[in-house]
Image 1 (cartoon, rainbow, N blue to C red):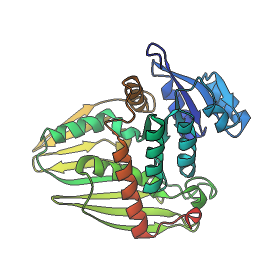
Image 2 (tube, rainbow, N blue to C red):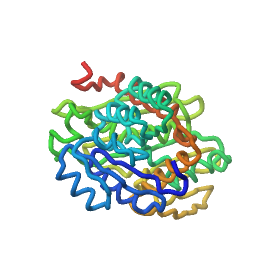
Image 3 (tube, one colour):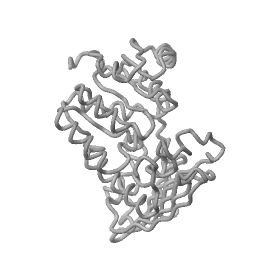
Length: 329
């Protein structure tokens, strides 16, 4: 890769998330959307026109074969993440794969081994990891500013039972439900601040299509507990609290895209504003660029091990609560 040039992105799976991501890619100076692909040529053409992409393809394979693509953003439904990431990497492409990286830990293991074999960069698109408020909160905790961490709370919910039953949220064939789509965020936050729990207590409720639509979790740590929730049956406050012996941090709603945080110590509460440009994806893009320019094959901030650990946590909760998908039988 010529370091003076822009980093050339390909995007596959042109749904809502890809729209937002493409919008933010165009805010990053050294990024260029070179190619987009959909199974519908009309959709690819329209997306390419909207986001000034040079090439539009009617198949993912055609994009993987395009020599001008440096890195591919995989934004298909969850169930396609492993297959398409592996095909892209086998064509020598670096990959930013939308979360969850795989349907279970073994998927992620396979993807990591393909990345290592092809010596290409691979990262899970866990964009909240790069949010400035979340990064600042982590730095404050590591500096001992809130004392010993004793309690973490994070939730993520919105009402979705009016969505189409064949859509990605309510369709078991697409790996639907709250856990993999949005439960991954609270789980990620607890993991980021407290690491792997020693025990998990959890409970889920299910919808008529068979997908899980409410999951509550208690993560037990040697000296702390985290109370986590995801749901599609209602909204929730979506503020995150990280509390210790000397103070507490509150990530403003919606915490996964926080535009600031409150630092509370005794009777004093200071709000710090940290607005993000666009939809908040630019930081994740900048991390990919930084890694590619340094020749890194994974990010230090969200590594392969981090993705494997997260997949293991999701899988543990699924096993405990009997969350199964038809294609896994």
